[in-house]
Length: 114
Image (cartoon, rainbow, N blue to C red):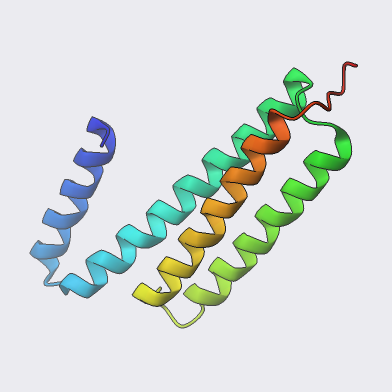
């Protein structure tokens, strides 16, 4: 775990303890932050693939559409004010699949430059 992320989580934990927040609330916030951070990272990977020519325009569109679907699913999960552990696992599985697709598309034989 990176130092910045560790410090951020520690700060959130100490702040929440000071305000009397429940452990479940802390876990919910941590899950939401993890999902958001990962979503940002995957979008940067797609952008980098477009910039480098590793992704063709159709590949990038498909991957971006998948990221949009995940973002909508996250919005639905957060709509009631919290992400349940079951919802967090489902979102993480979708992100795992999307991550594998990004990797495969960036490393396949197709290239914008060929």
